[in-house]
Length: 165
Image 1 (cartoon, one colour):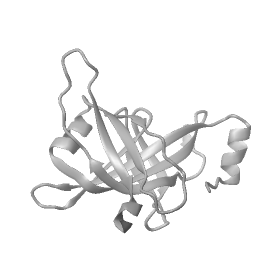
Image 2 (cartoon, rainbow, N blue to C red):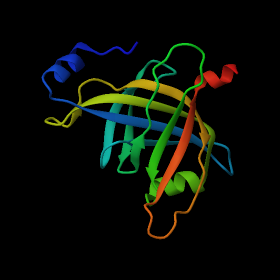
Image 3 (cartoon, helix red, strand yellow):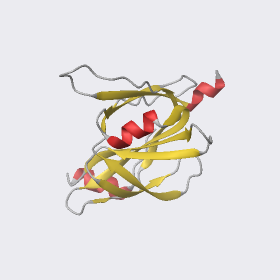
Image 4 (tube, helix red, strand yellow):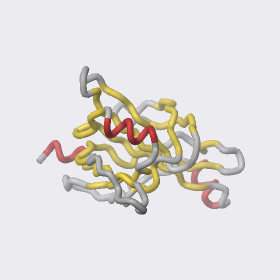
């Protein structure tokens, strides 16, 4: 079940809210194997947002890059031990995405997808964004688009329940 705070419910009822998705990917440096963090959100520009870390339960502030994350696939809300899959679509011409895929190794890296309710009047989150998906990057292929086509990159993520299989 997905829980909402009283503030979020009130804002939704008053129709003073829009939904934003925040994605955190952790890859590794190909040379040193040290972790590298990439944070994106489904809006434009840089945005400092508070999110509830799924692994620790604490509220942390992260800076998210906008404009690069173009689409987040449907996140199935199911119970049980079934492995879920979510596709993240990025702009293929964004410099941060290009660096993330070509310079660093994302395969097997951790991913957290958060949902936040954004007040467009005040340009703030109503409450810290909570996690909707925890898992790993399954595929992050680097492809070059054909001439005249829109450049986009799809990163496939699988849920953490894959560790049980």
